Length: 257
Image: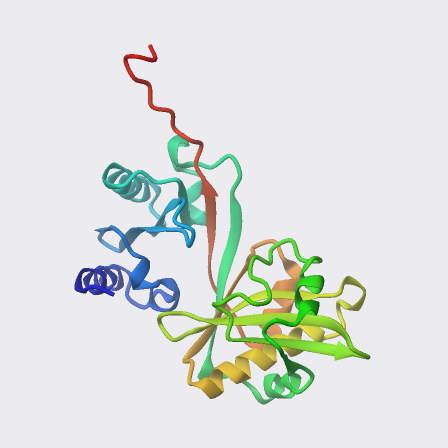
């Protein structure tokens, strides 16, 4: 991490004091360019495979969000955007994606883990990081994007019965020190039986024992079952967001005219 990136994160924190996204989700080592306008903060980053540049803008005023996106796009042309869901509908077409993901960020402070959650955690066990059953189970998920053997995963928790894996969840560690739950999935025929609560609770408790101050996760905003699950464990929804790739812009040259 460079001094410039440390300063960039500080600038975002000053614009968005106490925003859990900035505090716990942003990795300063990935920040390229930052722009702020009052209590609105924006930055660009490259995806892990470095093939796409995304701009994230936090703030509810669509006019200021648009101005920040244009400022970033001029400096480093962007391929995708993430903004507050409340501002997305009023963005100009140039920053609206043909297909957007509507998602939300949730977090649980380690100091708010209840005895009920600790009790749920006993129903899950730790799995080998390369357990082949993990990927077999994750085929039932339409949102899982991290699988067994991924270098970012520090642990997997699962519920097993007679050698069969019924539910699973993985945990990463963010640069902020927060734990991040990913790839939560349960066998369709066993949903509603508390197994997903068990695996998530186990990871929350394990993260607390590691010293993680909070646990965060992301999910589709329309996932009613997920809302019930994470609320029961003690998570709180931070905010809803819209993300999507922009329509590719074609440069027209004199030779092409």
